[in-house]
Length: 331
Image (cartoon, rainbow, N blue to C red):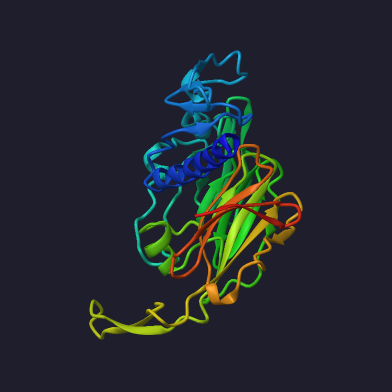
């Protein structure tokens, strides 16, 4: 029983850490809170490393970890980018503060400079171009044609970036600049790797439309697919234009159709996508996927499922290679 509780605690910490990281990244303030060490054995908290069971502090050298980032040791990514581009690049130019909106698929602005877990790799969108830099990396342009992307994220291992362009989800290799399209069916009703209005408003938190999550390593990306076709549309009058304008928004009223949701895992190296097997749930439950994350090793996907009435909650593990699901507990 004790081992089971410790396992649940560790998995919950992993999931909570990912969600805390999302919350603060959304406002451009960087990653805060606890996180797992690179090998998944220790907890990093305020620049120090601790044993998860005893909370005893561990020295960074003994743990094979670096408690401080390369940037803190003197590397200036803005100076490196300025030299490569032949002009001054400043934090203000790159933005980095997501435009807050409660409307799905709203423009986000420039995502700013993003660094991976150990600050070994840093990427930035300058115009529609992706640039990469780092303490031991030649600063260079990796790819172009990235204007207007949304939900731009660098993988924790620094090997990939993910983004949504128009209505489909893509990954791009930081080393070779090769782009892989993961979805083909994005539309007004189909959301891939991002949330619709009701999931944002009532499940993941107001203003948070992110629906894709990188594994700590290995180039695996989990993402949701939401289908809004069963949801009723409502007409809303926009009174700001001089001639007025009618807008339609989807909203699932009580007793009416909910959006349906699925969970998928993509291999960034191949572009192959595997569906997580949710066939164990009955259609009458109208399930909600309320949290998604990864175990510290990145070998298993962890996610939470509820029924529409929220009378129970399942904590599940999924094998990203097969899509098979194992329920750990039901609350």
